[in-house]
Image 1: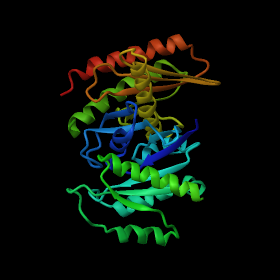
Image 2: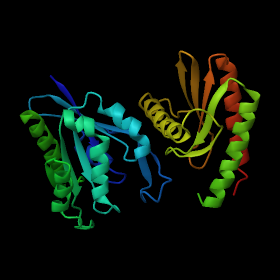
Image 3: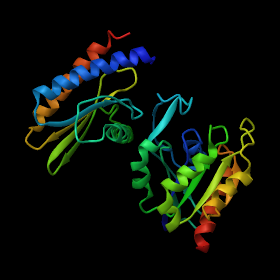
Length: 176
Length: 133
């Protein structure tokens, strides 16, 4: 039985902890603490070290899923958690002030990992979330960086949506 | 916590950090961070305070999760022993936002004395904060 490691990252409040909790077969290891940064997000709690969950793939292989903190002041955790990772899922949220800047920030922050492995992007499509920026705008940001990453509109509260991101990432990694 | 109270809390933290530093010359750096990694007060050092505050938050949260997994109830302190010194991360008891004190000391400082001095400072800060409105 093989074990694989992937990361889920994205800005504060994008749904990283929720996504892992949606698909994990074990109780999620969570390092959430009280959020005092209400300028960044109105969330009551925030992840300050990592989240961790596991799912079993077809054939019995284990997928270990690590969630990163979203804030740049925790970028040391981004580097630590990137070690040994097979690939990256970036979650974005149109309800945040500048989602396209968020995309650039995480493409920069995880540049070495993306270059070595692969990444897919999930943009929240919850009914309450604005439809702007458009999906095309996200692709334009990637095109300006000579990148084309698979992008999906997802609701991370839905298991099938999170598994779509995971399966897509694994497919990307297979063809590399 | 409103801004005025945050400033009053930071002033209390600074007062006791300065005293801890003055009484213990082996201390190289010390700060008090919020549970989510913001620096509230620090003594001047060569270490980047904002980064150390964020690391304090991560380390203490991981410690708490390990304690939780081991059914040991509540994480108080995280201790790192290094080749040329040690790092202590202590919970400030009963603080409203789960404040954490991190102290970096050189290897000349006896660990037991460092732990005693830091716990005493943490307790004093905790007691003083009860009167901060």
